Length: 202
Image (cartoon, rainbow, N blue to C red; front, side, top):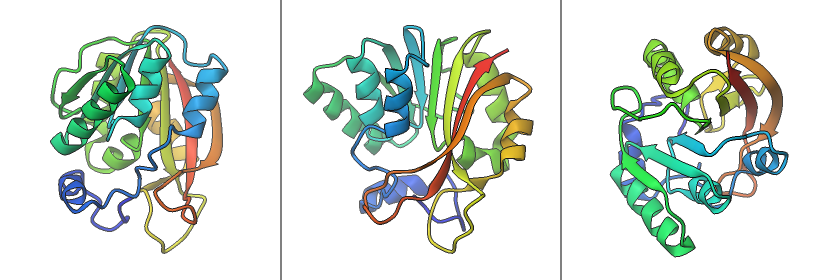
C-alpha cells in the first residue's frame, strides 16, 4: 500500500508500471470471503470500485454474482481481464473514474477495498454522491479501510478513525458490522491494521 505522504490516486499508474503494488496480495481478501460465506452480501449484482488486478472480482463471479468491476488504471484492468479469462468467469471490467464516470446501477452490493479511505480527504462529497447513485434502499456496502488506531511510521494505507467514517457514511447507510482486521499485502510480515465496515443503504 502506498505511503501516507503523497497519497494520490494518479500515483497508482506509476506504481503499476514499476511493479510496486504491495496492496495486491494475490489472494481473495479473507474478510470478503468470511462475509460471503456467512451470506452477508445478498443479491445478484455487484459493483467493485478500485478492483485492481481482479482477484476479488473473480471470487464474486465464481459465486454467481453479476459483477461490474472498475479501476482507473488500465494496466490493472488488463491484468484483471486475464485473471477472469483464466478462471473462466464473466466480469464486466471497465477503466473508469469512480467520481465522474457513469457506473450504472443501482446494485445489490458495493465492494471497496481501499477506495473510501483514499478519496475521502480530497473528494468526500463526490464520493458520497457516487455512492448515492449506485445504491438503493437495502444495498449492502462493504468498505475495507485503513485504521487510525494503529500509529506507525511504516508505509501503509490512509487511516480513518471510527468516528470519522460513521460521520461521513452514516448519512446514507446504517452500520451492520464494524470490526478490526489486518490487510493482506504482498509481504507476509506487513499486515497493516484496517476496518471492516459493512453497511446497508437506508
